Length: 334
Image 1 (tube, rainbow, N blue to C red):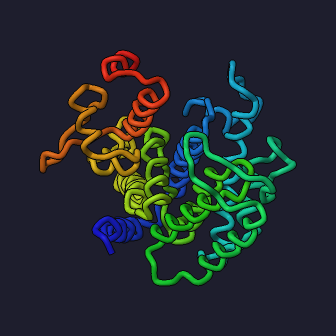
Image 2 (cartoon, helix red, strand yellow; image 1 turned 60 degrees about the vertical axis):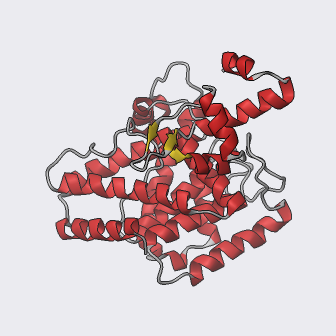
């Protein structure tokens, strides 16, 4: 067990000692997290509502007047908030990850797409799916039911693992199947939080501000079978939520450690090279020429890059290969 998981165990034990928290405090925390999870999870998928607009829609429904925003975006917020309430109840009913069923996952998805795409809500896809900007391949449609049954069997047979690690693995395995036409990311994050709820953890929020790093961890996990960056990101999210509950339970402000302005996980040049599919030598050269920006340096002196540099690297390569631009021309274009 790594140090992060040990730290989560320690924080969870501290929170358990503070429980039961005052009901009013718990309600306020849960409502705050419902908005934050709904906003972030939807924003990762392209929803245009702000945090404030998301809160307004969750509170007032479609009666909320959100000028210039699509009705679909408002329905996504309403549905996601309903799905959170559903998995809270489901966590109490199922009591452990070993009892989650395929129908449970379909039910979560059905809520997500209710009124948006009723034809496919809660139903496995019958066509191939693709992610824009990624060459990741997913199971063919006829293999989806079998792949989902494998996921359920894995859940039923998994024992003696830390709940946060089980939640992260379930998240990753589900996304790797992509069983639905739409709503896979949101369903995956709700499945992850369903498992966390079962073991007394507060909901973990993958922040929209960490979107690029989040997607990059999937690329690394799927192409290189390296799940460590993904585990790190999920464990950090779980830790932030525990910190918020601990702060609230101790009468302190909950926002410390939750600020969206907090720096996303930075990448070492080797990590950036692996994710982007380039050599370290190439990235060093492009950095020297001013095409890539170093965000910071580690204590050991290693260059650290923002996750956004992954797309920058791919763009540089496209400009070289497709438009035959020189380094100077690429720099000007960027």
